Image (cartoon, rainbow, N blue to C red; front, side, top):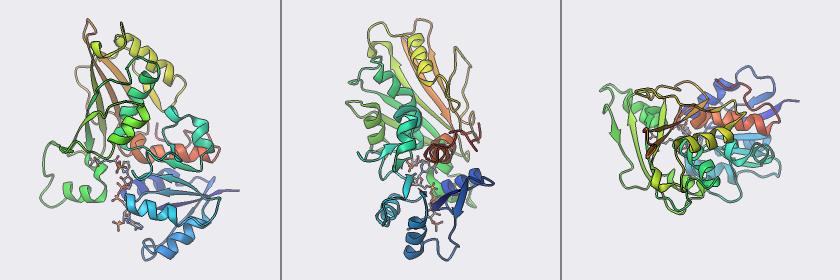
Length: 309
Ligand SMILES: NC(=O)C1=CN([C@@H]2O[C@H](COP(=O)(O)OP(=O)(O)OC[C@H]3O[C@@H](n4cnc5c(N)ncnc54)[C@H](OP(=O)(O)O)[C@@H]3O)[C@@H](O)[C@H]2O)C=CC1
Ligand SMILES: CC(=O)N[C@@H](CCC(=O)OP(=O)(O)O)C(=O)O
């Protein structure tokens, strides 16, 4: 029997990419609403309560509204929005950190933010291993393709006047919506300083955490960090850790159109300064690819089915 799926927000950027990844998959039956009904609350409530698993690809308030529409004890949820990412009764949908079984068994799964995926993948295993102290005051620089801002930013960058900028930084209030999940899911005592930027590329992402060796547990250098990350992600078909790869540059397009994520540990010869770097696609492991990976686990299927690896 196929699992009934409803994507609430299926006409949006993340929703469309999830539908593309599910096309032709006989394990799933997709419940759809036509254009006239897709924002009709009664129609959405009907679809939500008919579904076995609902994937929310909506703004935060609409996502909260969808969850409130559940009137049974059976429908399970994957929420791509920020609404439930630090909620205690939701499993954080980064199976490489939360655990595959936790995601597979969960009723409510919160899909991570795209930047948070890179940051948490780099930092959480190193904090857990005691190599980055929980009290470390971290910074995170990142660059994203403009689809990260959904339909509104796509319209801005693809409008008649062309892209508004070749590179622009933002979150200048230091209150970006991903910071709470970054801190909580890495078990850090202090908020990281988050410095994101957006470029005129549809999708792609680099997330970086610069470190001084003095910030780390005694004697920890780049090799130790790389070994710890390699051990943590051993056996993962989605997340890989590059061994001693030292290119001169790393383009934001590196993992464009892929659902995988590559992690790097760069250092100077003396290992006194280190750059932890994650490359992913904001719509791949950063959103739709991650949602399909979580969906596979929740449906009892191999986690990489249908992913672009
Ligand atoms: N883009 C990305 O890289 C990532 C996005 N996310 C998150 O995923 C969610 C979706 O983002 P994204 O796909 O980019 O956003 P989009 O703006 O591209 O799509 C959102 C969709 O939701 C629809 N919608 C809005 N309100 C309602 C409502 N009340 N009922 C039904 N549908 C509604 C919109 O309708 P309409 O078409 O009429 O505007 C639109 O189709 C957001 O919470 C976002 O933060 C998470 C990780 C990465
Ligand atoms: C380039 C850009 O604007 N990116 C978005 C984050 C995209 C993402 O991860 O979405 P959610 O956290 O909303 O789910 C931003 O910084 O707000």
